[in-house]
Image 1 (cartoon, rainbow, N blue to C red):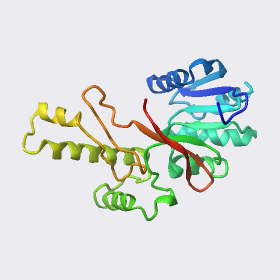
Image 2: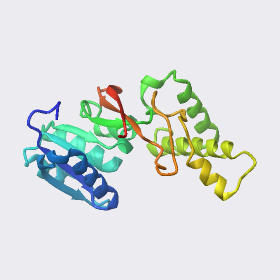
Image 3: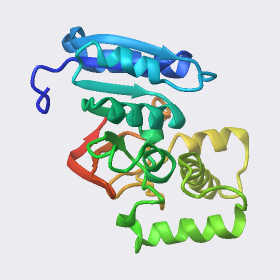
Image 4: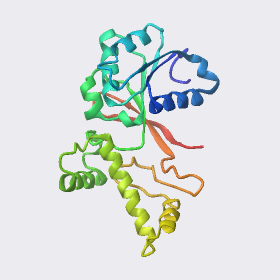
Length: 235
């Protein structure tokens, strides 16, 4: 609303529950501005490319493109936009916000200006070269997780989930019953994991078991994710 004059929104989404849920979430978040959505295109995970969908979305005249997609189609979409000379504000979901796995295949120059909401550090981002948490993660991956690319966003997420589970077990003490594990899993307060962005913590309660309640907006500048704006917290 504040960054794009007269926004016209196009959506590329995966044709399954994952993609449809993100599309619905965007519509809900836009509220009375959902009428600004001018075109939607879906893709199947078996599609070799999303080139035709991007061409169609460009034809809508949209100046904002939301990619509710997994890594490979996201890379393809960013690259195709560049080939077409189409430069909408490109918004990608946090699960594809990897420099090495998504933006590098798309072309770093092509990816300048791509924007996302982030809660995890990116293993390939030079911002975190000297970060203690990043060093701990890199050491762990090198020692215990052979054959997995540490820049894979699923690896970063898995490591974070594992740290959360370790905290649950610590809180259980010697009472490792199902009831107590569940109780402690719903009683996490202010846990900071190695790969969470600064200021973001994991929290759960019995009536809200989703541990991620915060995000930072970030824009790719050609080399790294530049965080901007205030810490966004679930209302």
